[in-house]
Length: 441
Image 1 (tube, one colour):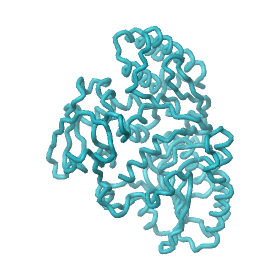
Image 2 (cartoon, helix red, strand yellow):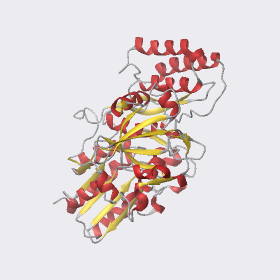
Image 3 (cartoon, helix red, strand yellow):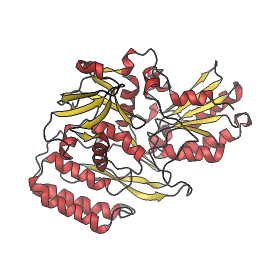
Image 4 (cartoon, helix red, strand yellow):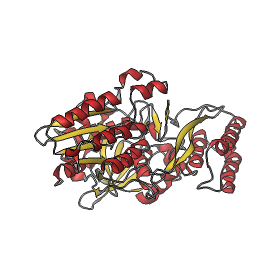
């Protein structure tokens, strides 16, 4: 399935960018590997994390108190002899998440993807508003596509997700929803949170008529060929992101749509060749030069008849925040674009992707359409990384706080709220893009 699988791939990209910095490698926690560390080695790792996170984070007690922080570590050290390795790892993730900023994280979501050798519950879920629906599933259960999850082992979905959210470093509900739909598929997560004691779990769903369906599912080794998805039967996919698979890895690209007089610009990563080279990223040459790219785009905008200029930030999770500022200033000088710039955002818009929103709003007065962002406007960032000495588990942490726009209490909210509906998704209709297209200037 194109839309969701590609979104997952973005989540799994090997380069994670912070709001004002770029980290070379992702901080992904692998639950299936067993390191066979001794209790003493785990306690050494826990002590190392407790000391160094408090020392190096710019303000580790901004959400959790010093007493709460120390108690969490103390309790874990006492529990180590009784815990399985995956439980220690997830408890560490839980403690790090309690710090309360999305960039200080021990990420566990990246293991939840379709990959040979990874045991997961055989479905893919996605949020449509407040409904968590099946968008892909093992072929044996194809008729349940589109059903809505209502409970796991008789625990309501809302309660299940509240527990899962304790493992996710987040600052708002949007970012936790962006990740919890993946974590729910990991058996170790459900066992750790006492949602189940066994691998076999009862997932209850409702169909579009309100009928309740209960599926008793065991984890399976995920293989794409064993899955069927909503998008398999579509002749077009929901997002323009998927119209040309050759554009999948591109940090940014644009396309002119002459019939609609729309220039569509997809800005997926705040990174270009120069930034990638500066941070020592391998194969930095694959990235285009952003200044040269935008000079070409500006020329196209000046030369062509433009009814709307649409900037899509729905896949942008960050990078170097400085790139968009210069481009926004160039746009502000094109008078024919006044009132014609539209920016698409959703819960996957994060970090420097959010900063790009602020720049475009302040400099171009663009119209924003979609969902609130996954990242907060004012937030902790400029990440560094700790590596635990024995387990080698990586943890990112923030070294600065950035107050970019005091008027924003949390995330960046759209001028025109639009959520992708499931019905239109099954028809290959991108509701957010269509709303921008239909907007009367």
